[in-house]
Length: 231
Image (tube, rainbow, N blue to C red):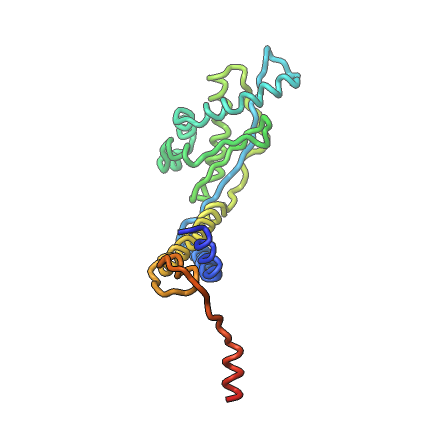
């Protein structure tokens, strides 16, 4: 097996391979759209200010300190201890549907553009609960942070928004389906070519049988057709 042979096989079956990839992409997208429950998310944004001795003035040093501590705050919030508190604050009718671990796995905290602002996103297939749970998470952050870090003050940037239909999962699996289709199609073409014992060209003769080639008789398709017309 050589790179030349791999590329030659790829060029020869390129249309078939691409068609298989597109077919798998379309099939995966259709399956995700019609047979898998859609996911919705609600976002909220906040930052935690480091208040020193009740100061109300935010300096450059304070901003740098807040940025450096965002990963620490995210680590504190991304725990079962925090989500147990979130679950306790939920309405009993919703609380019974989720464990703290499930709430944690459905929530992400990310830093916004390398700033001190943190984005909270809660994702679920239950669109009617998404905003309520995201709002409850936001409201639980302030008392939780203040208990662990006395100088940390929660400041809301954006409140939890209305549920938004998430297309990221369908897109991701569709792309994966495309590459799986391409890989399977190429693998089938490769196996088919490997099992084919016919000699197709000079390279096949040299590679398979290690025989010297003294010369080759070219094929004159046009000449034969012309001779047939004249004969």
